[in-house]
Structure formats: C-alpha cells, structure tokens
Amino acid sequence: MKTQGIFLPLAFAFMAMPAVAQTQAASTTMANDLPPLDKEFVQGASMSGSTEIDAAKLATERSEDKDVKSFAHHMMVDHTKLTVELKMAAPHGVSVPKDNSDSTVLNSLKGLHGKEFDSAYIKSVGVEGHQKAVEAFKKEAEGGSNAALKKAAAQALPTIQDHLKMAQQLAAKKGVQ
Image (cartoon, rainbow, N blue to C red; front, side, top):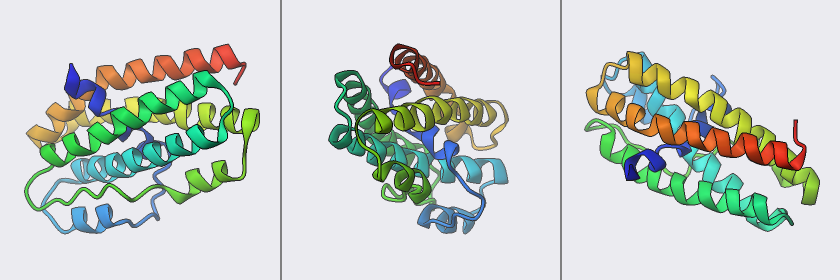
C-alpha cells in the first residue's frame, strides 16, 4: 500500500512530456538497452515526479486556499517518495534524476496567484496530469517489458487513480472545469 502512494508523481510527467524535451533522464535512459515503452515510462515518470513536486511547492506559495494547499502537500509527499521508488525499480545503468521538471508546465503557473493559480494548478497538474498518468501507468503495467518497471507501474496505479479522484473532487468543489 505504501508503494502505491509513491508512484503518483510519475503521473505528472506524462501530462507534459513533449517529444522534444531532452532531459538528463532521456539521455541516460536512451543509452541503455530498455525497450522503447519502458524508456518512455522511465523518462516520463522522472519528469512527472519532479514537475509535481515543483508545482506543489508553487501551490503552497501562491494559493490562498487551504484545500489546494492540502492537496499540494499530499502530492509533494507522494511524489518525493515516488522518486525513491522509481530509482529502486529502474534497471541497473538507468539514472533517474529528481530535478528535471517540465519548464512549460511550471512557467504556465509561475505568473499566477490566488484563485487564478488554483484553477490552473487543479486543472493542468491535478486533473489532466493524473488522467494522462493513469493511461501511462496502465500502458506500462500491461505492456512493459521490464518486470520491475511493470510491477512498479501496476502497484502505483491504484494510488494514481485515487489521486485523480481527489483532483476531480477538488475541481468540482472549487468550480474548476
């Protein structure tokens, strides 16, 4: 159960994983023998976790809403744990950096404050990010080649689905569409 809560952070990497984004994770992962689906998962997961942590830190600074701050804190804790779990599941020779956030997502939030920030954070990071993450984790759990990564994705999926529900409930409560 503890492991499940750890893998949500991977979710957000998939929300904003542009094909052109070459990160340390991408270059390190490309250098090993992982099949393409597994490489994509590791790259996306590392970016997602880092992006989620940084976006949650922004939320604690820029939001004035206790529910948004509570959600952000929960995501920050889970995504920090996820970074450790991903490193443990990654095959030998695959480096999983923790500081490779998607600058596009973060930059879209940085100029916002208060309710405007809350709406953007809930929609893009909370709901849309988790929707994409659920799809990505299902894809890896069902079709990945690396047994450890498949297992990690499968174990994390229920937690990611729970986080999506939390984000959807928060969006409904705050009138975010």
